Amino acid sequence: MKSGEIVWTPDQYRAPFCLVDEFREWVQCRDGEHFDDYAQLHRWSVGELDRFWLRLAEFFDVELGRHWTEVRTGASMRETQWFPGAKLNYVAHALRPTGSAEALVSISEARPTSRLSRDELRSAVARCRTGLRRLGVGPGDTVAGYLPNTAEAVIAYLAVASLGAIWSSCAPELGTAGVIDRLGQIGPKVFIAADGYVYGSTRSARSNADFLPWNTQCFWTM
Image (cartoon, rainbow, N blue to C red):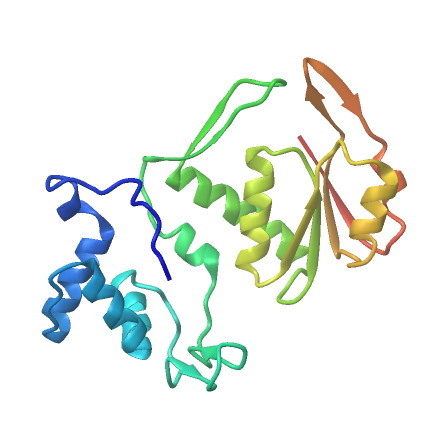
């Protein structure tokens, strides 16, 4: 097997500050391993699969809960289960950083650009999560969004995922038949919708009542 041409290599000033190098040094201190270069690190990662993935989870402080018993089971990739018994929630990690640093920027033709800090985003997600819980949303339920690509869509997704529920969405420019075909199959418990969107300085309004043939509840947003 021939290798392709190397497109870019970090210079001696950048290399020590990359995450791969930080991880290499961390493993060396943690386990007493020694890697002269990336190739040696790579060989170790594929030769010591369990230890590599365990160390990677520890390095990035991945919260796996307390009920996992081993790194993986199964003899083949198809049969492999990673960290059986572990519970992992993406939102718990995505919203872990706090403070005033900018976390989400939403640019729209219909309104001024909005900027949410880490703390503001966490607060918005918490409020949306509370509303969803009052509507009975829990693990395994489905929530659908009929929303443009705005901050509200991100907040709704994070709130849904934080509850262990399933999120699915459609863009507002998708026609009635497309929305019903896509979302009607999953029967969302809650439907979060915008009443229109703006593209090319032109507003397009939709009658979302036509899109609710399933038994669901509806949030009207924006």
